Image (cartoon, rainbow over all chains, first blue to last red; front, side, top):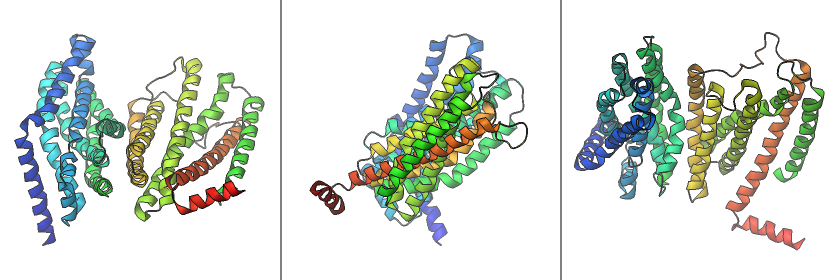
Length: 227
Length: 231
């Protein structure tokens, strides 16, 4: 019974978040536009040489994805915090970790998934060899949920602060280091024809650990921010 | 209690450091490859150990602070962070001073260097988060939570970076192989121990100050102050 209630609450939250995202479409596009602009800056900054671009492509795309995610994280809980919805969610009696997970899933679907969908275009711009293309998309599919999950902890910790944005990036970027290393390592290995399964399985392990633990940390941080 | 302890811990630190530095800088032999620069090790290695140990302590104390809501633990977490950050910086700076003549460069993106740098950023994050809140107890709890999350990540960061790139020599304390000569080992161990006393002394002093600041309007602080001024 209570399980059913919890899953209903989960779905209801997801639906609400989608509706909100759909009604603020312009806001949704901002991180994506940011992603495009940042990636464009690199060829302009380091020169258009195809070899050079190809060698830095995985790193550039991943770093741009990190920045775009962090940009969208600041608003993850903010509006709900400001109008009191977050307090109602805490009071609803549903497990807070579940609520945190629902919000994180919604965040990934509206902010993380578009990055994945956009990545082939970016890879083409950056002249990434074809061997790396599919593996880049795979790392992004596994990696962007982890970005959302870890980022949600930071978002929840800074939600009650007036200017949380810059602090948020200071908090979460160190935590993103392993992911960045593994993902770009996998793509680079694929480009030169080396096996990359190890990196992918490690990333997958990271995803599972983050999926099971991060919602609880986010819930604790939310409770703390509301106290 | 801590008031009686603090001078003693400081005293042990000063005496220990004097002995350790004497043994390390004067008595210990110079390395036949590294020359005099080997002496940087007596500051560098203990600082690096401390930087990691303090972060581990912060995570453990943060856990206790969050679970049992013990205020003293919150204060200890917050008081640890600047000390840990300072040790991390000392390790990084002495390391790059040593790296210049030895490796020919101040900085390389090597595994241990990078993970130490990331550790420094984690410390900065904890301190910045604490400073960002107005209410000290809430701030301390937020910082505790962050240090726990960071401690989970620290081994992962370390191993990912090792896998990424390694130049730094491995540990000399593996138990087998030639290892390290006693004349160099002793000053190192003394320095490592004495730095723990420094941490203890500094931590106690800082925690007292933080508590006094937080409670400066409360009765017991006012009583203390009037007692002090009537003497």
